Length: 548
Image (cartoon, rainbow, N blue to C red):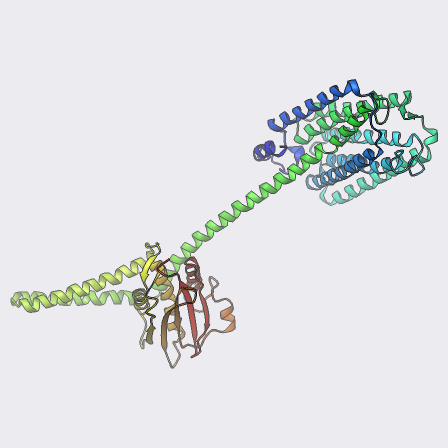
């Protein structure tokens, strides 16, 4: 409930202020927070007014209530103090250090207050307490927080942009903690060891005239803090807003618990004690909601960053796939041109012969050479189509396709431009794995790369045999393997075999096997290498069956 209005307002305000979005003191309260704070304030006043007619009526005598209430306040105020110290360490605004000190004092003073409260842990209280000790500790506890809020507001008013140096933050926090411990100890010693010199505030469980005067003066502190926050905090921040609500509850607490009621365990005292607890959780809830909000922003930013990285990786993979195609073919462009030129030359020769046969009216021979010309034209068209599809990769849809035909086309393309002697090619294709579900152009590229690498690996080998095998695996995948009889892979090469931009070729980009792995994984398989028992290396990958 506290978090929702801040979430809608946080981004625009943090950009406008140019400050850290983690500091509530720098974020003006959004309209939703103002409406919520106004509603809580009206509810507090309504409960306060409804309690007034019954405030002086005695109720159940429950000393254990004091122990429960003080324990809850100790825990909540300690957490609030720690969170405010954390805000101070981030923003280095000294007002946070002062405010954290006030909450720390309120938390620590609850310990001696509980120990000295009559009938809670002993009949007259521990620590050598007198009948007035708990009452004076109550006044000290309820004076400290308004005083620190006033000090923090004045500090911000006169030094709104001043901040402590980074290297002095830990020292300032340690100094504040030490000062608060000393103040709590001194206050406790004063009201326990010196209680006989202090005016009586409690007489037979009821407040004395001196207590009314002291509490009346005490009421001025939260009122002053409330008015100071309302006048000096411009624009009113979320933290300032809820400190104002806290001071309003503080006024109700003191008025009901120690001014209007006759004494302890009246209805007014119980309601005031409940208000006391509420004052300890307002700021705590705001700080916790801030932490949740910041974690939410961080998680959203991390998710957006992850999506951006994935999109860039996908774009880079597409670029690398294209570069891999162009690089592999660019290294052999003259041979490829020669390969295409062969059918074109044959066509030219056949057409010249056709002209001669036409002049001689030899229709039989004319028909024969025209048929052969058409075959060579079809061959040239097929080569150009393969090269075009291989480079551009227009066909990107997975579908059921014939594996033997794909392998033969890929091998034929890989053999273009290979200097003789061409290694022996053995294709052992399983009859139970004739087809699979794959992207034709991409898997042709994988086979092309593996065959080219295998041929180059066998360049200096006496025995040069390239074996391509297919089989159906136990998990119903179609496995394709490309084995060579080269020298094999060294441990250094094997360790980084599939990493991008790692190559042993003088003119290579080092993206071939990396792209092959990406393509195979996109098909639901895994590309890996292992030693060939007959010497050399075997690369294996699997494709889903065509029935999928």
